[in-house]
Image 1 (cartoon, rainbow, N blue to C red):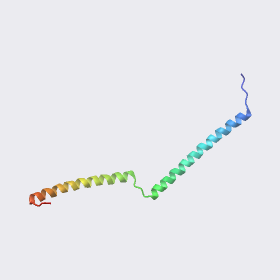
Image 2: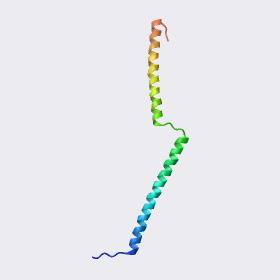
Image 3: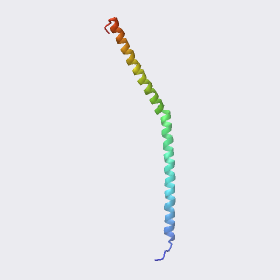
Image 4: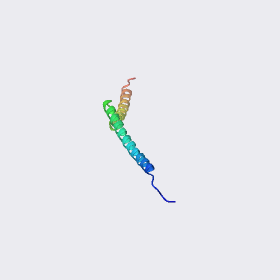
Length: 85
C-alpha cells in the first residue's frame, strides 16, 4: 500500500495543530489573568498571610498559658489569705 499525501488532510491537520496551540496559549493567559485578579482581591481585602495568622495564634496560646498560671497563683494567694473568691 503506497502512501499518498492528501493536501486537504495535511492542511486540516495543520489547522488543528495551530488551533490546539492557540487554545493552550489562551488557557495560559486566562489562568494568569484569573490569578492576578485573585491576588488583587486578596490584597484589597487585607487578608492576613498564613505566617501572620500562625504568629498571632502562637501569641494567643502563650497568653492563655500565662493567664492560667496567674489564675492559679491568685487562687493560692486567696486561699492563703482566707479570701473566698
